[in-house]
Length: 88
Image (cartoon, rainbow, N blue to C red; front, side, top):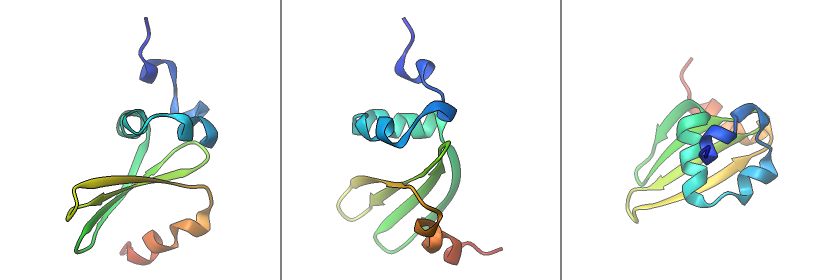
């Protein structure tokens, strides 16, 4: 039997499908099938940005609380914070 990750490729994942996954499946999918773009650090957060086929996903690690939030970014305008912070 194929695992979830083996059955799903990043090129075929849609936003609605990604949102239906459990948090555990989302994190695993990002780590194994997403394209890691960058990491930003603030006083209380570590933000990791991943690219999917038609959207972006950020993982927000709250280092003071030890929690993880997952945000789906469907438009390029949502990437402004990352673009401002990346030194080119």
